[in-house]
Image 1 (cartoon, helix red, strand yellow):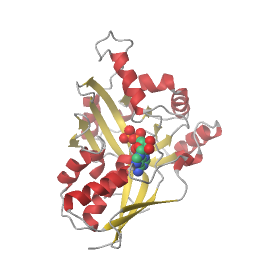
Image 2 (cartoon, rainbow, N blue to C red; image 1 turned 90 degrees about the vertical axis):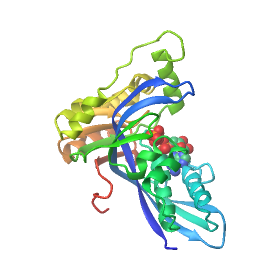
Image 3 (cartoon, rainbow, N blue to C red; image 1 turned 180 degrees about the vertical axis):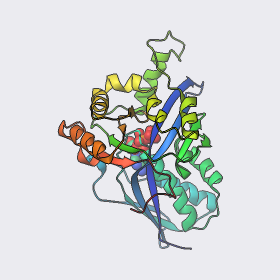
Image 4 (cartoon, rainbow, N blue to C red; image 1 turned 30 degrees about the vertical axis):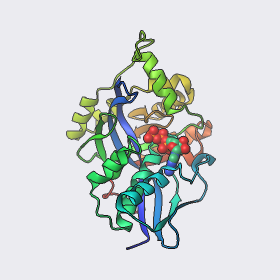
Length: 312
Ligand code: ATP
Protein backbone atom coordinates (compact mmCIF):
# COMPACT_ATOMS: atom_id res chain seq x y z
CA UNK A 1 0.00 0.00 0.00
CA UNK A 2 1.27 3.46 -0.91
CA UNK A 3 0.14 6.85 0.32
CA UNK A 4 -0.82 9.51 0.72
CA UNK A 5 -1.81 10.02 -2.93
CA UNK A 6 -2.85 13.32 -4.46
CA UNK A 7 -5.36 13.83 -7.26
CA UNK A 8 -6.45 16.93 -9.12
CA UNK A 9 -10.14 17.32 -9.99
CA UNK A 10 -10.58 19.71 -12.92
CA UNK A 11 -13.75 21.61 -13.74
CA UNK A 12 -15.32 21.35 -17.20
CA UNK A 13 -17.23 23.64 -19.49
CA UNK A 14 -19.50 22.65 -22.38
CA UNK A 15 -18.45 24.07 -25.73
CA UNK A 16 -21.68 22.67 -27.13
CA UNK A 17 -24.63 21.14 -25.29
CA UNK A 18 -27.66 19.70 -27.02
CA UNK A 19 -30.54 17.66 -25.61
CA UNK A 20 -32.19 15.61 -28.33
CA UNK A 21 -34.96 13.85 -26.41
CA UNK A 22 -36.32 12.37 -23.23
CA UNK A 23 -36.25 8.62 -22.69
CA UNK A 24 -39.20 6.77 -21.15
CA UNK A 25 -37.13 6.27 -17.96
CA UNK A 26 -36.86 10.07 -17.57
CA UNK A 27 -33.20 10.37 -18.58
CA UNK A 28 -32.37 12.79 -21.37
CA UNK A 29 -30.44 12.01 -24.54
CA UNK A 30 -27.61 14.52 -24.85
CA UNK A 31 -24.85 15.45 -27.26
CA UNK A 32 -22.19 17.53 -25.54
CA UNK A 33 -18.66 18.68 -26.26
CA UNK A 34 -16.93 18.72 -22.90
CA UNK A 35 -13.70 20.60 -22.21
CA UNK A 36 -11.48 20.58 -19.13
CA UNK A 37 -10.45 23.99 -17.77
CA UNK A 38 -7.78 24.97 -15.28
CA UNK A 39 -10.04 25.48 -12.26
CA UNK A 40 -9.42 22.64 -9.86
CA UNK A 41 -10.11 20.95 -6.57
CA UNK A 42 -7.32 19.02 -4.85
CA UNK A 43 -7.77 15.75 -3.04
CA UNK A 44 -5.34 13.89 -0.83
CA UNK A 45 -6.17 10.32 0.10
CA UNK A 46 -4.57 8.36 2.90
CA UNK A 47 -5.28 4.91 4.33
CA UNK A 48 -6.73 5.06 7.85
CA UNK A 49 -5.71 1.61 9.15
CA UNK A 50 -7.26 2.04 12.57
CA UNK A 51 -10.79 2.49 11.22
CA UNK A 52 -13.09 1.01 8.59
CA UNK A 53 -14.80 4.28 7.71
CA UNK A 54 -14.46 7.10 5.19
CA UNK A 55 -13.62 10.51 6.62
CA UNK A 56 -13.67 13.62 4.44
CA UNK A 57 -12.03 16.79 5.71
CA UNK A 58 -12.59 20.08 3.93
CA UNK A 59 -9.91 22.68 4.07
CA UNK A 60 -10.42 26.38 3.57
CA UNK A 61 -13.62 28.23 2.79
CA UNK A 62 -16.00 26.77 0.23
CA UNK A 63 -16.51 28.79 -2.95
CA UNK A 64 -19.39 31.21 -2.51
CA UNK A 65 -19.53 30.37 1.20
CA UNK A 66 -21.89 27.52 0.27
CA UNK A 67 -22.63 24.58 2.52
CA UNK A 68 -21.38 21.21 1.34
CA UNK A 69 -21.98 18.09 3.37
CA UNK A 70 -18.82 16.05 3.85
CA UNK A 71 -20.79 13.00 4.96
CA UNK A 72 -22.12 9.96 3.14
CA UNK A 73 -24.15 12.07 0.67
CA UNK A 74 -20.98 13.66 -0.73
CA UNK A 75 -20.04 12.13 -4.09
CA UNK A 76 -16.48 11.67 -2.79
CA UNK A 77 -17.77 9.43 -0.01
CA UNK A 78 -19.95 7.43 -2.39
CA UNK A 79 -17.10 6.98 -4.89
CA UNK A 80 -14.69 5.84 -2.15
CA UNK A 81 -17.26 3.39 -0.83
CA UNK A 82 -17.84 1.89 -4.30
CA UNK A 83 -14.11 1.16 -4.67
CA UNK A 84 -13.95 -0.32 -1.16
CA UNK A 85 -16.81 -2.67 -2.05
CA UNK A 86 -15.49 -3.53 -5.50
CA UNK A 87 -11.95 -4.26 -4.30
CA UNK A 88 -12.75 -5.70 -0.86
CA UNK A 89 -10.82 -3.02 1.02
CA UNK A 90 -11.10 -3.36 4.81
CA UNK A 91 -9.09 -0.31 5.80
CA UNK A 92 -10.65 3.11 6.31
CA UNK A 93 -9.60 6.15 4.30
CA UNK A 94 -9.09 9.81 5.09
CA UNK A 95 -9.69 12.25 2.24
CA UNK A 96 -8.65 15.88 2.40
CA UNK A 97 -10.51 18.16 -0.02
CA UNK A 98 -9.45 21.63 -1.08
CA UNK A 99 -12.31 23.10 -3.08
CA UNK A 100 -11.99 25.83 -5.68
CA UNK A 101 -14.62 24.75 -8.23
CA UNK A 102 -17.88 26.62 -7.57
CA UNK A 103 -20.68 24.37 -6.30
CA UNK A 104 -23.88 23.72 -8.33
CA UNK A 105 -22.39 25.75 -11.15
CA UNK A 106 -22.66 23.59 -14.28
CA UNK A 107 -18.92 22.89 -14.02
CA UNK A 108 -19.22 19.27 -12.83
CA UNK A 109 -17.37 19.95 -9.58
CA UNK A 110 -18.96 17.05 -7.72
CA UNK A 111 -18.41 14.70 -10.67
CA UNK A 112 -14.77 15.77 -10.96
CA UNK A 113 -14.25 15.10 -7.25
CA UNK A 114 -15.90 11.68 -7.57
CA UNK A 115 -13.73 10.78 -10.57
CA UNK A 116 -10.59 11.93 -8.72
CA UNK A 117 -11.64 9.78 -5.76
CA UNK A 118 -12.08 6.71 -7.98
CA UNK A 119 -8.60 7.26 -9.49
CA UNK A 120 -7.04 8.00 -6.11
CA UNK A 121 -8.56 4.98 -4.33
CA UNK A 122 -7.45 2.76 -7.22
CA UNK A 123 -3.85 4.00 -6.83
CA UNK A 124 -3.80 4.11 -3.01
CA UNK A 125 -5.03 0.55 -2.56
CA UNK A 126 -3.37 -0.77 -5.75
CA UNK A 127 -6.65 -2.20 -7.07
CA UNK A 128 -5.41 -2.41 -10.66
CA UNK A 129 -8.71 -1.16 -12.15
CA UNK A 130 -8.46 0.15 -15.72
CA UNK A 131 -9.89 3.52 -16.80
CA UNK A 132 -12.66 1.59 -18.57
CA UNK A 133 -13.58 -0.09 -15.28
CA UNK A 134 -13.42 3.22 -13.40
CA UNK A 135 -15.78 4.77 -15.99
CA UNK A 136 -18.21 1.87 -15.52
CA UNK A 137 -18.24 2.39 -11.75
CA UNK A 138 -18.52 6.17 -12.22
CA UNK A 139 -21.51 5.85 -14.54
CA UNK A 140 -23.61 4.44 -11.71
CA UNK A 141 -22.87 7.49 -9.54
CA UNK A 142 -23.45 10.25 -12.10
CA UNK A 143 -23.67 10.84 -15.85
CA UNK A 144 -20.69 13.27 -16.00
CA UNK A 145 -18.32 11.09 -13.96
CA UNK A 146 -17.15 8.79 -16.82
CA UNK A 147 -16.00 11.90 -18.75
CA UNK A 148 -14.19 13.23 -15.67
CA UNK A 149 -12.05 10.06 -15.31
CA UNK A 150 -9.67 11.34 -18.00
CA UNK A 151 -11.20 14.70 -19.02
CA UNK A 152 -9.69 16.69 -21.90
CA UNK A 153 -11.84 17.31 -24.97
CA UNK A 154 -14.55 14.71 -25.50
CA UNK A 155 -17.88 14.25 -27.22
CA UNK A 156 -20.40 12.80 -24.75
CA UNK A 157 -23.55 11.13 -26.08
CA UNK A 158 -26.29 8.82 -24.76
CA UNK A 159 -27.02 10.12 -21.28
CA UNK A 160 -23.43 11.41 -21.18
CA UNK A 161 -21.68 8.05 -20.84
CA UNK A 162 -20.88 7.32 -24.51
CA UNK A 163 -17.58 9.08 -24.91
CA UNK A 164 -15.44 9.88 -27.94
CA UNK A 165 -12.04 11.38 -27.29
CA UNK A 166 -11.33 14.41 -29.50
CA UNK A 167 -7.90 15.80 -30.40
CA UNK A 168 -6.28 18.17 -27.93
CA UNK A 169 -7.77 21.68 -28.18
CA UNK A 170 -5.78 24.72 -29.15
CA UNK A 171 -5.43 26.53 -25.80
CA UNK A 172 -8.24 29.04 -25.24
CA UNK A 173 -8.10 31.97 -22.80
CA UNK A 174 -11.30 32.17 -20.78
CA UNK A 175 -13.19 34.47 -18.45
CA UNK A 176 -15.50 32.44 -16.21
CA UNK A 177 -18.12 33.78 -13.79
CA UNK A 178 -20.84 32.18 -11.72
CA UNK A 179 -23.65 34.45 -10.53
CA UNK A 180 -24.79 33.99 -6.94
CA UNK A 181 -28.29 32.85 -7.87
CA UNK A 182 -28.96 29.83 -10.01
CA UNK A 183 -31.61 27.29 -10.81
CA UNK A 184 -31.64 23.59 -10.02
CA UNK A 185 -30.67 21.12 -12.74
CA UNK A 186 -34.00 19.38 -12.14
CA UNK A 187 -35.96 22.59 -12.83
CA UNK A 188 -33.98 23.18 -16.03
CA UNK A 189 -34.68 19.73 -17.47
CA UNK A 190 -38.36 19.72 -16.43
CA UNK A 191 -38.91 23.11 -18.05
CA UNK A 192 -37.04 21.94 -21.14
CA UNK A 193 -39.49 19.02 -21.40
CA UNK A 194 -42.40 21.50 -21.40
CA UNK A 195 -40.81 23.79 -24.00
CA UNK A 196 -40.04 20.83 -26.27
CA UNK A 197 -43.33 19.01 -25.63
CA UNK A 198 -41.50 15.80 -24.66
CA UNK A 199 -44.08 14.68 -22.12
CA UNK A 200 -46.85 14.33 -24.68
CA UNK A 201 -48.27 17.85 -24.56
CA UNK A 202 -47.90 20.46 -27.32
CA UNK A 203 -44.54 22.27 -27.46
CA UNK A 204 -44.69 25.49 -25.42
CA UNK A 205 -41.77 27.27 -27.01
CA UNK A 206 -38.82 27.09 -29.35
CA UNK A 207 -35.41 25.59 -28.74
CA UNK A 208 -32.22 26.57 -30.51
CA UNK A 209 -30.11 23.47 -30.98
CA UNK A 210 -26.34 23.93 -31.41
CA UNK A 211 -24.55 22.34 -34.36
CA UNK A 212 -22.59 19.78 -32.35
CA UNK A 213 -21.21 18.02 -35.46
CA UNK A 214 -19.79 21.30 -36.77
CA UNK A 215 -18.14 21.96 -33.39
CA UNK A 216 -16.59 18.47 -33.42
CA UNK A 217 -15.32 19.12 -36.97
CA UNK A 218 -13.82 22.48 -35.98
CA UNK A 219 -11.98 20.84 -33.08
CA UNK A 220 -10.71 17.98 -35.27
CA UNK A 221 -9.50 20.53 -37.83
CA UNK A 222 -8.04 22.75 -35.06
CA UNK A 223 -10.03 25.64 -36.53
CA UNK A 224 -9.46 28.26 -33.80
CA UNK A 225 -11.66 30.87 -35.47
CA UNK A 226 -14.70 28.61 -35.84
CA UNK A 227 -14.81 27.29 -32.26
CA UNK A 228 -16.13 30.53 -30.63
CA UNK A 229 -18.65 30.98 -33.44
CA UNK A 230 -20.11 27.50 -32.91
CA UNK A 231 -20.65 27.69 -29.13
CA UNK A 232 -24.21 26.72 -28.25
CA UNK A 233 -26.24 25.42 -25.31
CA UNK A 234 -29.89 24.43 -25.72
CA UNK A 235 -30.45 24.85 -21.95
CA UNK A 236 -29.98 28.62 -22.15
CA UNK A 237 -33.63 28.75 -23.31
CA UNK A 238 -34.62 27.77 -19.76
CA UNK A 239 -31.91 29.21 -17.51
CA UNK A 240 -31.53 32.68 -19.07
CA UNK A 241 -35.16 33.73 -18.48
CA UNK A 242 -35.12 32.20 -14.98
CA UNK A 243 -31.78 33.71 -14.02
CA UNK A 244 -31.28 37.05 -15.83
CA UNK A 245 -27.75 37.42 -14.40
CA UNK A 246 -26.66 34.78 -16.94
CA UNK A 247 -27.74 37.04 -19.81
CA UNK A 248 -26.17 40.11 -18.20
CA UNK A 249 -22.79 38.40 -17.74
CA UNK A 250 -22.93 37.12 -21.33
CA UNK A 251 -23.58 40.67 -22.52
CA UNK A 252 -20.72 42.11 -20.43
CA UNK A 253 -18.26 39.48 -21.70
CA UNK A 254 -19.37 40.14 -25.30
CA UNK A 255 -19.03 43.91 -24.90
CA UNK A 256 -15.57 43.29 -23.40
CA UNK A 257 -14.43 41.74 -26.67
CA UNK A 258 -15.15 38.02 -26.16
CA UNK A 259 -14.96 36.02 -29.40
CA UNK A 260 -17.76 33.81 -28.08
CA UNK A 261 -19.80 33.51 -24.86
CA UNK A 262 -21.87 30.66 -23.46
CA UNK A 263 -23.49 29.26 -20.36
CA UNK A 264 -21.93 25.98 -19.16
CA UNK A 265 -24.07 22.92 -18.36
CA UNK A 266 -27.45 23.82 -16.86
CA UNK A 267 -25.82 27.00 -15.53
CA UNK A 268 -25.55 29.44 -14.09
CA UNK A 269 -21.81 29.72 -14.90
CA UNK A 270 -20.96 31.73 -18.01
CA UNK A 271 -17.66 31.71 -19.91
CA UNK A 272 -16.21 33.91 -22.62
CA UNK A 273 -13.34 33.13 -25.00
CA UNK A 274 -10.86 36.02 -25.24
CA UNK A 275 -7.83 36.83 -27.39
CA UNK A 276 -5.64 38.01 -24.50
CA UNK A 277 -5.42 37.47 -20.77
CA UNK A 278 -5.67 41.26 -20.27
CA UNK A 279 -9.03 41.37 -22.08
CA UNK A 280 -10.30 38.45 -19.98
CA UNK A 281 -9.09 40.16 -16.76
CA UNK A 282 -10.91 43.36 -17.71
CA UNK A 283 -14.13 41.46 -18.45
CA UNK A 284 -13.98 39.61 -15.12
CA UNK A 285 -13.32 42.89 -13.25
CA UNK A 286 -16.35 44.45 -14.92
CA UNK A 287 -18.59 41.55 -13.87
CA UNK A 288 -17.26 41.78 -10.30
CA UNK A 289 -17.73 45.56 -10.20
CA UNK A 290 -21.42 45.11 -11.09
CA UNK A 291 -21.64 42.53 -8.27
CA UNK A 292 -22.79 39.85 -10.69
CA UNK A 293 -20.21 37.34 -9.42
CA UNK A 294 -17.97 37.15 -6.37
CA UNK A 295 -14.17 37.14 -6.45
CA UNK A 296 -14.15 33.43 -5.42
CA UNK A 297 -16.52 32.48 -8.22
CA UNK A 298 -15.02 34.42 -11.14
CA UNK A 299 -11.78 33.52 -12.89
CA UNK A 300 -9.41 34.09 -15.75
CA UNK A 301 -8.34 30.64 -16.81
CA UNK A 302 -7.52 28.43 -19.79
CA UNK A 303 -8.55 25.20 -21.40
CA UNK A 304 -6.26 22.38 -20.34
CA UNK A 305 -5.58 18.75 -21.18
CA UNK A 306 -4.99 16.85 -17.91
CA UNK A 307 -1.59 15.22 -17.92
CA UNK A 308 -0.21 17.98 -20.13
CA UNK A 309 -1.12 20.80 -17.73
CA UNK A 310 1.40 23.22 -16.35
CA UNK A 311 2.35 22.65 -12.71
CA UNK A 312 0.38 24.79 -10.22
P1 ATP B 1 -22.92 19.32 -13.35
O1 ATP B 1 -22.22 20.30 -14.21
O2 ATP B 1 -22.37 17.91 -13.45
O3 ATP B 1 -24.43 19.38 -13.44
P2 ATP B 1 -22.72 21.09 -11.09
O4 ATP B 1 -21.44 21.85 -11.29
O5 ATP B 1 -23.96 21.77 -11.56
O6 ATP B 1 -22.58 19.69 -11.82
P3 ATP B 1 -21.94 20.21 -8.48
O7 ATP B 1 -20.99 21.26 -8.01
O8 ATP B 1 -21.36 18.91 -8.89
O9 ATP B 1 -22.92 20.77 -9.61
O10 ATP B 1 -22.99 20.03 -7.29
C1 ATP B 1 -24.29 19.55 -7.47
C2 ATP B 1 -24.78 19.05 -6.12
O11 ATP B 1 -24.05 17.89 -5.75
C3 ATP B 1 -24.56 20.08 -5.00
O12 ATP B 1 -25.77 20.67 -4.68
C4 ATP B 1 -23.97 19.29 -3.84
O13 ATP B 1 -24.80 19.29 -2.73
C5 ATP B 1 -23.80 17.86 -4.35
N1 ATP B 1 -22.41 17.34 -4.12
C6 ATP B 1 -22.10 16.15 -3.64
N2 ATP B 1 -20.77 15.98 -3.55
C7 ATP B 1 -20.21 17.11 -4.00
C8 ATP B 1 -18.86 17.55 -4.15
N3 ATP B 1 -17.82 16.79 -3.80
N4 ATP B 1 -18.66 18.79 -4.64
C9 ATP B 1 -19.71 19.56 -5.00
N5 ATP B 1 -20.99 19.20 -4.87
C10 ATP B 1 -21.26 17.98 -4.37
